[in-house]
Image: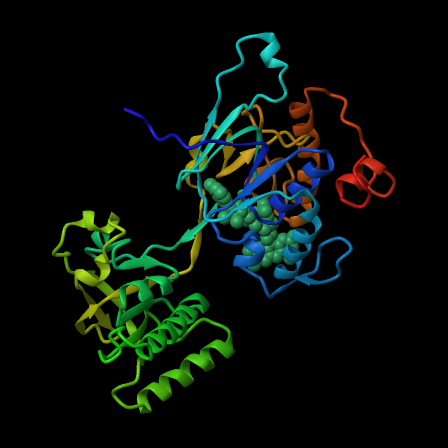
Length: 400
Ligand SMILES: Cc1cc2nc3c(=O)[nH]c(=O)nc-3n(C[C@H](O)[C@H](O)[C@H](O)COP(=O)(O)OP(=O)(O)OC[C@H]3O[C@@H](n4cnc5c(N)ncnc54)[C@H](O)[C@@H]3O)c2cc1C
């Protein structure tokens, strides 16, 4: 039997986590001439700065009296541009394997030999000399919807996040969006736009009534005022419009159960078919007065926010204290040789979970990593103001 093993991506270092500290780690490694890739389960870099406070100001970044989370990440991305570190979004690292120790002294001295194999949930594999854990408080994963009978529908009619392509592919008419935050409202409004577009396109079932339903367990919505106003205006115009228009409705309640699907779950993986359209999804929801209702739905998008989960990291044999990795503050190495931990994920005496602390940690970790990558204790220390070599690496002077 031929096993389909993915070809590993070779690079010096894999940085797991693309928050502010992971991004600055790229810079510090780049200055020392070390290549790296960055990986994160989120589709975009930025970690907590983008996911939790993108538009709020930060006041304690040295030399930047005030900047928003978004601005800080944009500045970091500009700063690391010269090093061309590939970013792999949507990738959750699940496995870290130490490759067998080199058999001969000669091999042990080979700086080009990878020491780790790192795999992601969706099948990417990296062969690297060192690993930096910059995982913050854990991977930001979607908060799960808890409802009876949901499991067989996951990936079949119920999805986390964006469903716009699926609406188009399956020509759906009844779309439900679960949640009440910015992402949920945006998804509902986008779904409305997509259904309106389909309704106006010939041969897409435009004569069948179509509707978007936003269901949230609270009456209050938790999104920027502009977005809430936009949503409410669409609700009002939908209530006034004639029967031919695509409708928008808001339900204050919760989905409690899904009816078992009639077709086998295997269909989900047959990309040539449209399983969502062929097997009707029926659900039960309860309103604020606890009255139960049933509905037939084509597609459901769940948007209940993200929650950090430490996940597989806790199974990698790392010495940990209260879900944080214990490090040596000389170079932020962990008890696992070749694995370093920087930013909110680590702990040591006096640790403060601040971005500037993470920047310092990334700097010392880069020197520790350089010793491994170049197999020498003599790593030159140079200033960016004066070093022609650093200017070259920063793309400020032509390569010699
Ligand atoms: C509301 C709020 C306000 C704050 N204000 C300030 C402030 O004013 N000043 C300040 O200095 N600090 C502030 N902080 C703290 C600051 O945001 C953190 O210290 C900083 O984000 C830590 O950066 P990090 O890169 O270590 O981790 P994070 O920003 O948490 O990024 C870690 C990344 O790793 C990814 N990841 C995790 N597990 C995996 C895995 N298995 N595979 C792949 N990727 C993974 C995550 O998805 C995430 O994107 C604030 C925090 C909050 C919540």
